[in-house]
Length: 105
Image 1: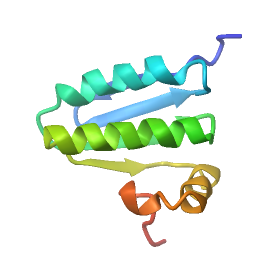
Image 2: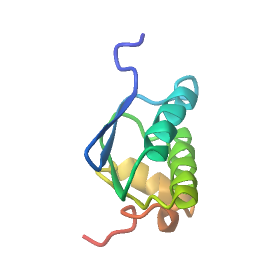
Image 3: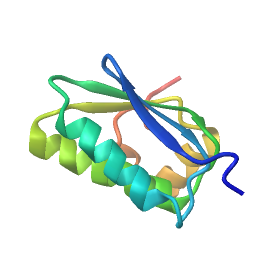
Image 4: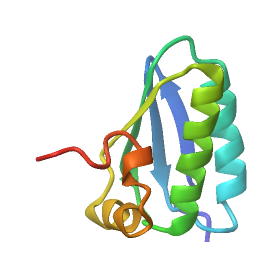
C-alpha cells in the first residue's frame, strides 16, 4: 500500500515532491516541506513533475508552503505540475497564488 509513499527533498534550490499524496499522507509531507522551506536561504523552485496525484489536498499543501515562504521571505515558484493539477488550481481560482501555474505556453 505504501509502494508510492510521497517524499519531499531539497537539492540546492529545488524542492522536489514525488509519489502519491492523499488525505492520509499530506500532513506529514506538508510538515517535511515546511521544515525544508524554513531552512532555505533563498528562492526555491518546487518541482512537481514526479507527483503522481492531482488532488485538492495537494493544492492545500502548496498553499500552506506558499504562505510559509512569504512569512520567511522565501520566494517559491512551481514547475512541472500536471495538466490535471493545473486545471484543479484554475477551477479553485488558486493559479494566481501559485507562481508557475498560470504561465503562458
